[in-house]
Length: 100
Image (cartoon, rainbow, N blue to C red; front, side, top):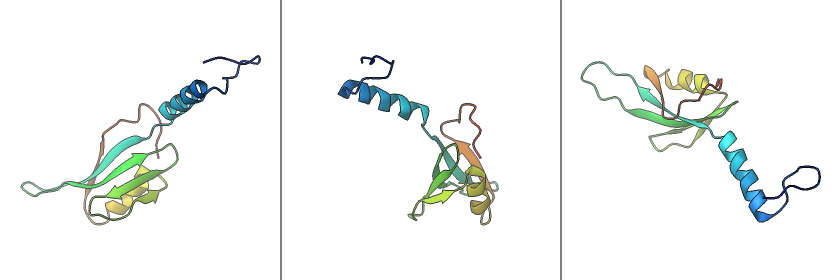
């Protein structure tokens, strides 16, 4: 990958691919599950799988429903927690990012 005279990445296909790879790795969302908390002996399970971005979260319910956007992980937990006691389980911890 070459740099032009002012230090920018050249517009070669390889330069563009590298730039896209770097951006994707910097902006990767953290994966999480919203799980039903259970009393002893009851089957709980995953209620929804989510992606947490810096300013929003998206949850795909496991019952076949459509993906739901939320203002953040806490908002998703509040909604899912209206029906069942729930627990947040990080698949990919957010690595120090402050996710709402």
